[in-house]
Structures are given as structure tokens and as C-alpha cells.
Length: 354
Image (tube, rainbow, N blue to C red):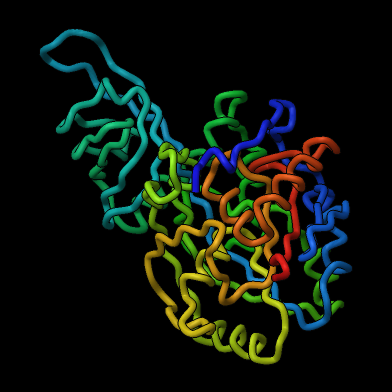
């Protein structure tokens, strides 16, 4: 399909720079399988679900992957120290990452950059687009701890360009149920709306909660530069689903209960895991690219934020609910004051009825 089919006009004032407070006061647009809309807030979610529905969360934890470093003045070539902004995006080994760096033109392979008195890295494998390799002097948990101590939340570039990242973002840009080692370089933003109160109400409604892990990569922010979807190269992300989680989801599917992914990352993991309509592939790197015409084998619905025009994520929701329906839904959202992107409002989408 032509990427232009997924375009729409988004006013600047529709883009959220801060989340709703409290989290579950964000607006929620329900889109039915027949393409009908209704307006709610996230705390209404339990009333929009049925007893026995299964919500699947991505419990990945966001690393404070936005760093600042200094490249010392070179002995030959003039100029003084240079400050560079670094956003880690892909872990290569226990002590190596790839990162987006600005201004990358001030770095060469072999340069050493200093993040703190104890943390430094050597530049290698510089590529176009400000993408460089960093080989750190620390590794494993020691490196992770050092990054967490000095880093900032890796807010999307459109927010970072408009305001300074601050202490509030450390709490806001993390789900309340994040677990394990911090490894994602972007938040699974649909989950940012959940609160203990929402979970309590879901439990009272007998909605089943399941968790998986997909480490979100910075590729989620990269624009689609191709003119046709067939020409786009999808980024890769690692996911893991516990065997007992897969068994419970498969049981629910067999009983005809609905599976709802919380966020496109949870959806990507579930659909990547599918073999003959069941969750089977439990650990893998996925490059799944979902566009209209794609078939959904596991999920029946999706809770997700509002996405960028011409993005792979808008293509995904259009595949689920229908392109015309999603164009109409987004036009309604813009007209009625919904807020877009990572800190924006939410939607509950049901698969289009055939």
C-alpha cells in the first residue's frame, strides 16, 4: 500500500507534552467492531470489558537511556571539548550499545567519550543518521547501574525538543507494573494509563491479567521513509512469553474468551508468537510488520494511544479496525480534543467484523 494512505492532519496543539493526572483520568475512545465510536476515560475500562476477558500487558522497564557525554579536545586538529547528547537504542553485548548521537559529526571511530568520572566509552562502527557504536569501560549490571544513576528518561524527540526532561518524567515515563532489569529505550505507552485502582476494578470484574516482556527499541520513533509499505524495513525487538502465560492465553482462546493486548508492543509479541492460532514461539526477535490485509491469530482487541501520521503503528491499528474506520476515529479524536502520542490519551479498538 502507498504510505500516503495513512496520512492525516494533526494540529500541533493535539500533541501531549505531559500525561493526564491522575493517569486513569486520560480520555479513552472505544471503537467497536462495527466502526462505532464512544467517548470514555481510562477508569471506565473495566465497564467496557467482560468477565473472563484477558488483558495482556508488556511489563518491560524503561532504561534511563538519554545521556550526555564529553568528547575531550583532540591533541591535533584544533577545537576544545565537545558535548554530545546520546540516546542508547540497541544493546549488542554486555558492554556495547548502539546509540543515536547529536552532533554525530563531531565524533570519529576510536574517539573516547566520558559520561562521568567512572563511565566512558570508545566510539566504533559509526553509520549515517547519527548512529554510532559505543564500547563501554563497564559491563553487565555494573554498566546498567551506572547508566541508571546518570541517565534521564528517553522521552520521544518531539517532547525533548519542546521542553526539558525533569524529575517528574522519571515517574511518568514508567508503567506502575514495570518489572525486572531496565532494558527498554521507550515506554510501552498504553500501559502508562494504568493505576492500582484500575487493576482493583478489573479484578472485581473478573478480567484476567497476563504479562509478557518485549524490550522496546528506538525504532518505534523512526519515520517511514519509503513511499510503499513493501519497501519499509521494520526494526527488530526481543520478546519473551513465559510457558505458563502462553498456556493460560491458549486456554482462554480455546474457551472463546477475548484477548486484548495493552499496547502495540504486547500485540507484536503475541502475534509473532502465533503458530496455528496458538501462542507457541515463546522467545524470539520479532520484525513483524502489520498492515491492512494482515491476519490476527491471537488478539481480539487492542488498547493503545494515538499514533503518528504515516507511522507503522497507525498502519497496525488500521489493519485491526480498518483504515477508513481509523481515519474517521482519529478525525473524531482531533475534533473532540483527544491528546496524541506517548503522553496522550488512549483508545480501545476491537477487530473489525468481517
